[in-house]
Image 1 (cartoon, rainbow, N blue to C red):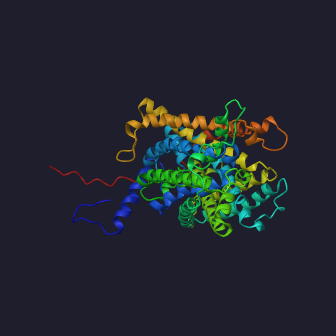
Image 2: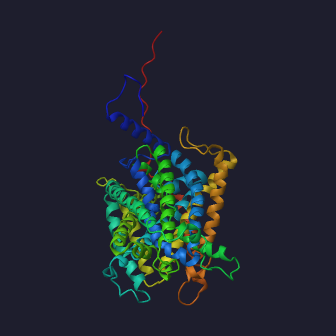
Image 3: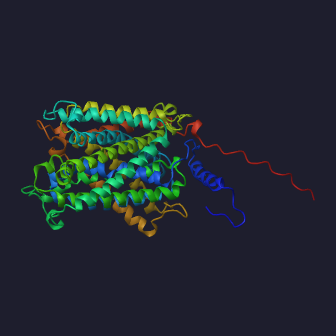
Amino acid sequence: MSTEAGQGPEPAGPARTQTEHDDDALGELGYRPELKRTLGNFHTFAAGISYISILTGTFQLFYFGVAFGGPAYWWSWPMVFVGQLMVALCFCELAARYPVAGSVYNWAKSMGGPHIGWLGGWMMMTATMVTLSAVALAYQVTLPKIDESFQFVGDGSGTNDAAANAVLLGTVLILFSTAVNAFGVQLMARINSAGVFIELIAAVALIICLAAHITRGPSTVLTDTYGLGSGQPLGYFGAFLTASLASAYVMYGFDTASSLGEESHNPSRNAPRAILRALIASFIIGGLILLFALMAVPDLHAKELSTSGLQYVVLATLGATIGEIFLWCVVVAITVCVLAVHAAGIRLMFAMARDNNLPAGSVLAKVSPRFQTPVVPAVVIGAIGVIILVININQPQIFSVITSIAIIMIYLAYLLVTTPMLIRRLRGTWKPAEGSFSLGKLGLPINIVAVLWGAAMSLNLAWPRAEVYNATGPQHWYLRWGAFLFIGVVALGGFAYYWFVQRHKTGVLAEHRFQTADPPPQPPAATP
């Protein structure tokens, strides 16, 4: 922030002025500033990229993509990126205008009204809890590959050994995340930023190491379908759509950079940049890891590619010692990813509770004077995440089912933002923040593509495929339609509760409401 020559303030002045400006923007939304602004530009970028988490997503579901789409499933990576980029660009405009905690909830409320806002927030909050459990499961696909001693339940050969052990490891991780997030955003941000730094360095180093071991060209890799989809109505396209789940799982959560807006400096400027940087960096780095892994693996048709995934590629290509170093970096990435998902969920629950849109709103929205963060939401979200894991302790298909449902609910929550935003554009009532990020005339076509993409991908991911929702055991219709049933119950049941109970109480709680200062006394009028 510049000042005129000869009138420079003291060193603390610019920071104070910017903070006041940020708080004024929050006050325009009706909220009193309560969360301490301590996060800088890199912190917000780190929050977005750690939620996306290149190493977590690619290592967790690479096996799934290869199993159902062959090496050519790689093309789903740029496809998902283009679609999500359209969504992210819409979010950038919103982040510049509404830099507020619980971004998706507040954006949906501002674009579509209180009812759409509540539903969007409810879907996002539920999805965050499911996502927390889904990401925590990634410990299981990495730690036992490093050392068999991490397989605490059985020897890994039993039907439910992997699922039960995944629940155990995931529970420990969620408990750690709960403790860190409850101690305040500064501790979380420091750990998260250090973890992201390690993850980015490891990802670049992994690309270099894999590139040094390339044994085949991209034309071989990108056209090998394993013959999947033959004899099916949609042919390989149907197999490709199933495999695209592996890419769709990685590139979301970029809105986290804005959800920490009330704890960031100059969020109107920094959040849009952080959103785009996180998504683009993830696309480039993740895409190169996947491509070079397929080009470097000793045997492109090894069955381990569709069972052990990238963990197998790293160990088989780089050897046990170097491979295990990279796998430990993956463990770090998984850890900070869980921290970021948890942090985003806390801000969302706090934002909804502050509007008295959740039961016991005053308790959930209370900011700890010691830790300067909402502690109760951290505990509640952590507890529910563990419960989700425990319920599925003996489900061998736990990975694909929980992951699929989490992604679909995130996509639906995003739709509850981009669709009302499109309606406002068509009506001519949407105005980006002056002097901040704006799509200009490209806003309408980008918004249309974002809505079409979100709707199409949600339907694709929820499609009742046996290989996703009923992969083992006897076939049951309610398992295959599990996504529709679970999400339907969450959406309809939750909205029914809101409509008949909570909407009559909604409104910013008094202790969180922005209070306009009394106007200064006016000097007496001069007498003629």
